[in-house]
Image (cartoon, rainbow, N blue to C red; front, side):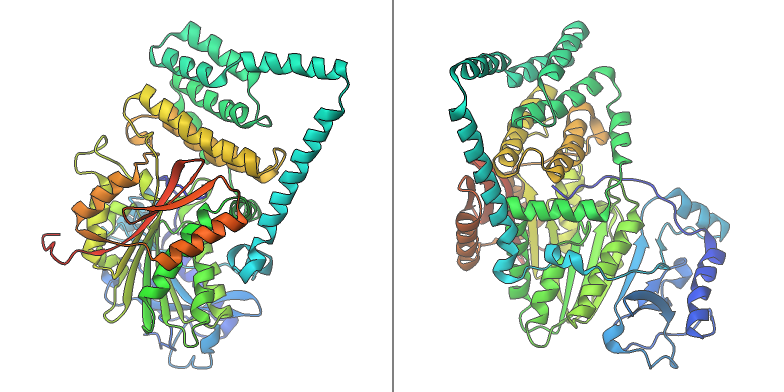
Length: 565
């Protein structure tokens, strides 16, 4: 729910002069001369790499992030800078690999053909400990909000039942009449008929049905009323032929940090889907890296980096934590610039790494997944390599976009990286059909389950619920309904289809650890609503609601018998 890929062009630094001016500010503060050459002295932590062009590829300038007094500074390390404390250093690199016009113009001005650009961090950051309860899981305390939410829903259900019993005969008769009027309008049937009219370009009928759906839908009603409220937007945009324009407009709405963490916290409290996924992935990583001095995680779909603070916390509990490297790969997120998100994620993780005394390096790469080259990842000998991708691959192009699909190409790139473990989480959906009516019906079934899950577990007046339904689900559904071809970015497949793709790419599936499965089953049964389901099938850990599988996660290793990858 919190993860989505969409390409968005953003500006970068305007040339060398701006870069040096930004650097000079920090050198003035530190009382150090600004030089254009010089090697970094490593104090147990790799240093941030600044790529200005292909001629710098073998001799990067080195910068290190220096955390002091809850603020972030940047300084160039020289042999005279040994007074910098190891515990205060955490570093990361930001690299832009997109075909960005700003990058191309910069390269032209400087006589360079490279489309690769690294961004320096020249802002300050303050540690924000109020986010700890969202990002760190402190034993059973992390379930307090889940219990509170369940108690609130039970209290509201009891109050509604009492109100119904206390009504007099006249009130009950009137209420019954209104209920009958509501039941006459079958919104699901209306939506399907409207989709058929839109597909047939029957504008008078489609317009009439859209009007009727709007009269009986509401963003504050029950699950089907809320779902219809957003689905009809997509139908109307498709009928008018303005799906792309409306979708792009929705992408401009920004998501603040406060909103992001409220949404994330609600998701953890109301549903086990994210918590189970992160638990499965992080335990797999801990097991694969046990006793190893260096761990390198390549995360396809870094997003806001919400998965990793709890893993850093777990590494710190091992006594001597490994040297942890995280390479976060992502394209831009709706409402954010690409580099803005990569910077935020890197700085947040650097903060937690210093807090827990875990040696840490972060490299952020802004790129479409299929354009990644293995040499971009700086894989080192002797490190345990983990590839992680949770619920991001659904936005890659399939065979309806190109015969040699982007998702197959990315899986082959991952296989050539030769990781010790590859962790894959997928949205289990069948609404990627190129045929509109088939796609719409599958979409209706899938999101009906999601909205029912919300209605059962979250109060209807909850503001974070409205934000998820409108800002996230509403945007996804509009893209699926009103956009076609490469403009349609939501293309989920079933876990069985992904299983076939992974095997074809040269991976061998690993079984679900029975201990992890049992602990997840216990957590789901004891903490969350009884209608949540978790099960294992063919090496996949499945999660769903009332029998419908929504998420599936699995782990893989390279198949050594496949030598042609």
